[in-house]
Image (tube, rainbow, N blue to C red):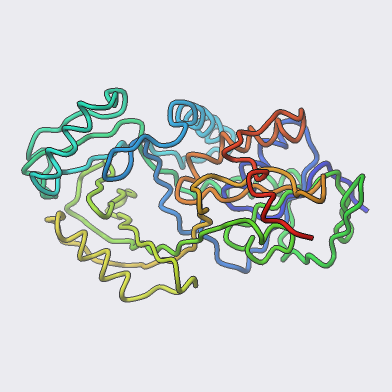
Length: 352
């Protein structure tokens, strides 16, 4: 029987960054990950953006989490000898005069100078921007598959990883420990993304999963280095490659790409993109979004050593570093979790 402090189930963004932070804290960790199933992390656009939506809403906790994850990711890049963090900022060209006036009114009304600056018309030749637009600083994207693979190799080197599908029936929980096959640990943490819907311990949580599809395109004549967002977004990946996205579907939750989503993305993109492109790939994933748009952290109401870290939704790369740290301090030092993230807010939904 091998002994650990923590067993982590799942190696998406949540499981990867929590496992890493626990190992850095000197804890013995075993990450169990089913490599045979598709995951949203494998196809995520990985955008981080402090100002979002048609009303220029500031991302929840932006002033705290954005400085935190920048320092975290840059440090992680050095340790893993990889480059997955891209602070490219984001340009939002005005779609029409009505939107231009709306955005200008919002920038005057709210204190957004820290994150927003105005861009004069016709800054870029590859896209339609004759009215100008907004330039958002502190934005960018994370190459999520590369980061996760870099951390997987770190886990393997630390003898903290095993590829296997988790069998809930093989889990034995007592007051003092959990036992899973030939592993025993003080605590187990489920970080399964969308697949938490199949987890008998946490399937009562109010997830609101959304399927999303993205496209990979080749654009030899596209030189914009910022993310461009006008209904759909374009992420420059380098080597003449860009990612277009994304769709949101709350029914038909499967991992299959569809011609309808391809058409939706290309039609919206063609409204502002003036450069020719060739679609080379199409990908689909299911985001573990939640009904209140806040993550799920904390311990099971009936089992004090069973925990969850999930529900990061569309903002996984922004939220995961900070909340992995928050969960670590909760696990190790009994530090209170933010009420907005603690699953205690949904204990009333649980029944034995």
